Length: 279
Ligand SMILES: Nc1ncnc2c1ncn2[C@@H]1O[C@H](COP(=O)(O)OP(=O)(O)O)[C@@H](O)[C@H]1O
Ligand SMILES: [Mg+2]
Image 1 (cartoon, rainbow, N blue to C red):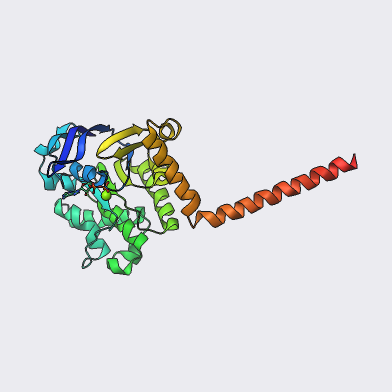
Image 2: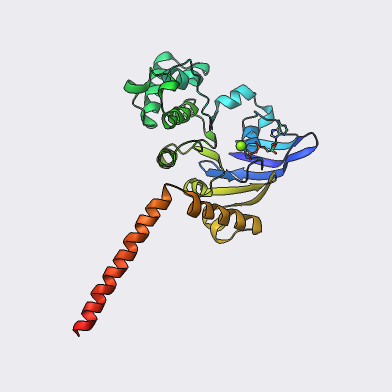
């Protein structure tokens, strides 16, 4: 569905993307992950030609993306970003309907599509269609972002840290919904994150990037079990440490769970010793 062939992007002679070759199969959910500045956003924006490669080829469905009209290409590739980027002066309905109306769809078809998409992302149109983005929470706005990206019926969905700014509960919820959406709609998704837990939860394949190069492109299981190099091993270990040390939502739960387990163990020991002494 998407194929990079020796793609290079330079800014002032500095290689930001350094000879990248990889492929994303139809209906695959690929997560790009790596440290800040490693080139994730640049890779994503080269797919819909918001950024033009310095050299190399990108093929979309077997066709050289350079030969496509870039506006046509962008209408056929959904794009969701962290800051959502909804038009503030347009209602939710108008935001979602924008691409289908640019595609020249009829008014009735657009209205049906818009309502169906709002249901799909869990925003009942009766309650939300006439609201403005500022009247929605961050998580609801991000749902609108996903609905809008799906409105043109794209086969490909590009998502650049779409959930990073959300609180952990909303984030986990939207991750689940994205997974179930993917199961139903079978889109080809390229999703950028810097969070390994998110990557493991969502991906069929994880592509780990460092310094504009791929260091490992593999299933989540293989990346966790057989890291290709020290960088991957350390990257995974560091992220797990982060989770153990930093996640405020997890820590109390883990502590509570820990308490429960030790109480259970103590209880079992008491029962065991009572039985033992009775003998
Ligand atoms: N327009 C630009 N001019 C010069 N350097 C840029 C430009 N855009 C991005 N870069 C550099 O390219 C590198 C990769 O950026 P980016 O793809 O945004 O990284 P990521 O999304 O992984 O954090 C960074 O070092 C960034 O500073
Ligand atoms: Mg980025």
